[in-house]
Length: 109
Image 1: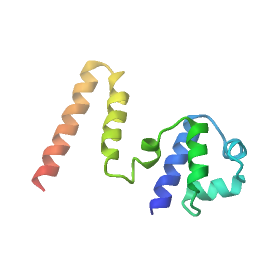
Image 2 (image 1 turned 90 degrees about the vertical axis):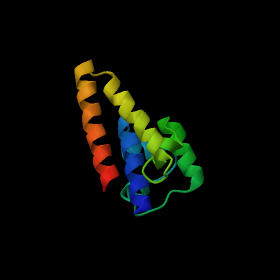
Image 3 (image 1 turned 30 degrees about the vertical axis):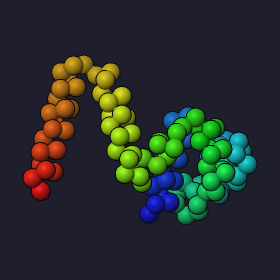
Image 4 (image 1 turned 45 degrees about the horizontal axis):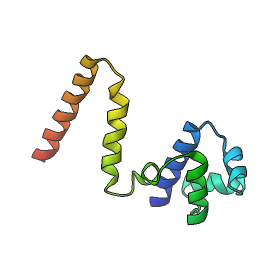
């Protein structure tokens, strides 16, 4: 499960950078099949290759591990903030109201 979540984040970062599996694999000296298996959570990437991958994708460890480390909640909050800041003020307020409602519901459970 951990490998799958990390693999999914790698895939998201790769696509955001506009790279195919083939292109990324070539840049970090892996086979496309191996990279595909990493993205699906079948194989585990070495620390050295993970660092290379993050450098090529220009992404942080926070972006890769956001779903698996508890401190990643701060990163998710930052991502949410970035996503809504470009919206009209009324839409920002509507989203915040929904979030507030979800928080209140979670606190009562």
